[in-house]
Image 1 (tube, rainbow, N blue to C red):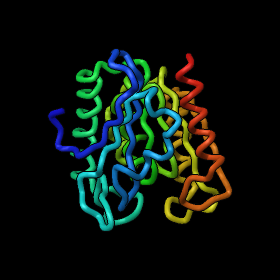
Image 2: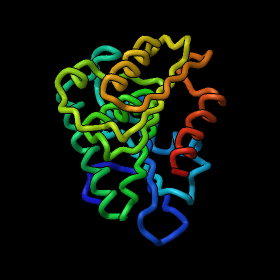
Image 3: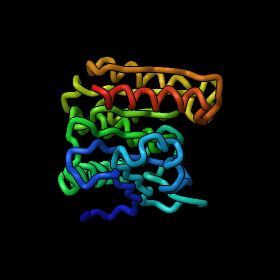
Image 4: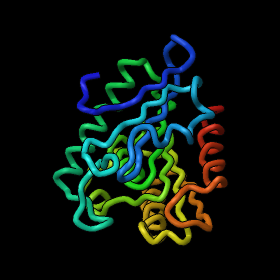
Length: 212
């Protein structure tokens, strides 16, 4: 991989090609180990790539900088999205992944990354899981939007999330519905986190799609 990213790659239990893949994007101050536990059910069945944010942010890392929550610094964000898009496209080619079964899972900042990649990659992404995230205003208004009618997205948000207000999740739902995507939107009696029910729901979302 010719990428500046540090990442973990858990390979599928087969050397054959055309295997589904899941790309993981952690939250602010975390690292590439954080989300591996929530995709346990897919280990061995899919290639799993967990990326470390490229920016140091104690006690871990970040995918982008910001002066105010909800407003990523554009220059840093744009460059990160280009690098991340290239990483996914290179991985698909290098590991002969199933191009029809590419999934993104992100939490917090990682969910922002996942939503944005869904816009710029369109139907390259079969399914996106956005856990407590949002989509930046400049992405919805200024980014080129690839056709995404064959993609689907699972958006979840805590009803008492005071880090990323629930209206941000609602805005994401509305935006992706306007793009013609199949949207699953769920809220949970939680703050900024992932409840056991939330975990079960998004795992089911991916599992059911893998059967198709």
